[in-house]
Length: 151
Length: 151
DNA sequence: GTAAATCCTAGTAAAAAACTAGGAAATAAA
DNA sequence: TTTATTTCCTAGTTTTTTACTAGGATTTAC
Image (cartoon, rainbow over all chains, first blue to last red; front, top):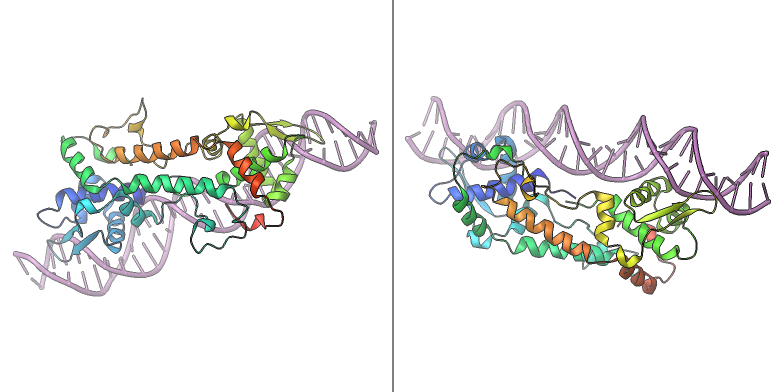
């Protein structure tokens, strides 16, 4: 029941990217330096964010990544789903519209999984990237050791 | 970001146990037969529930397990925490009262992890075992293939 | 042309999950 | 008192997933 480094690092990376990409594209190298995440690994994470349509890229020297849409329209849910796949701790076939599940009508735990899934979705979908960037701008007193934190 | 089989099977097992242990202790063998979960694995799960004080055991022939307290006082949160350890998708040191985290004061994602942790806790702590047993009694029309479901 | 970037795939080492196995200890019933 | 049934406890093993690393192709500004 843990969020992987994909989700944890990826969210940090995108907040960083959002914060620094207003003028020019932000390169993997620069995010890596600021956030203390391996370039090669970051590359993969950002690529997932691109596939999900959250960022777009500019190739070649001086290139990098920029947000593909307004920060106010990107939720933490969008970001984490892009990186982690679906966020449901239990993928119960009986919960899906077209779900094939023999035991569906006698299944009691289904109710529990559904409630958990819903509460997570609701939470992550209502936090938008712009709030986090705003918060980050306020807090950023230089000098703290960002790389010490694995979350 | 998945709940392991420990949590999924374990919750099912405890609902079963609660349902059948009102007169006599319920053996691992019988839970295993009804729920289609390996005896040897179930044994470990139930042992975790015992360590957590949710069930108590009667050794020897004719023995088995019974609930250690009233179903109305056992929450899904108690059960899942006994089986999965803590339910926080991100264990952020900065969230703990005594948390050691260099980046605590500049960390933006902390807020996100906190919100997610809280919403999960709230959800699982408000569903009580007796509700699930009640639900199970209503639904149990015999004949459905419980073993087909992995959740 | 060269340096700085993204892009893409594959490989790999470590960790965690999901069981399996073996046998000791307790107890009820024969 | 033996036997069958049950919990108890630890360790081993296989499979899956995670978290990277590696290599090189492609694009583009200067």
